Length: 138
Image 1: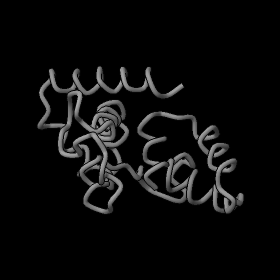
Image 2: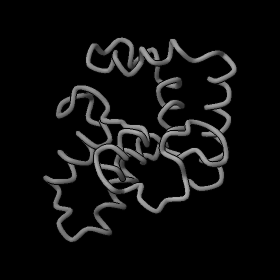
Image 3: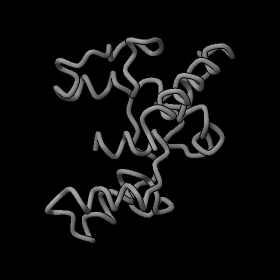
């Protein structure tokens, strides 16, 4: 789910992400890819499997497991050189898709956090996300 989260936050084409999973995982059967990756992981099936995008910031990822252990990025820092890219991408995703997410009652709580961001913070999240994506995501 962490990989699907990254692909969705980074705006990776769902078909490209599905091909990537299929090429790397021995258990990537079609039924698994359609439900787990396309439906739940990427929310790319029009809401048939999952009724809201399954997205998470670094703070949530850090709380739910040990994926952040030993990483040079700070999961609690939202912007700046030491901020985890998951945080920047998470807030950028919410800003970018705010209207669509606000219309979905299940994703409303995540979007409510946007009201606490200033216009400058929004610009900073979008700029840092764009810089990260330009450098690391083809």
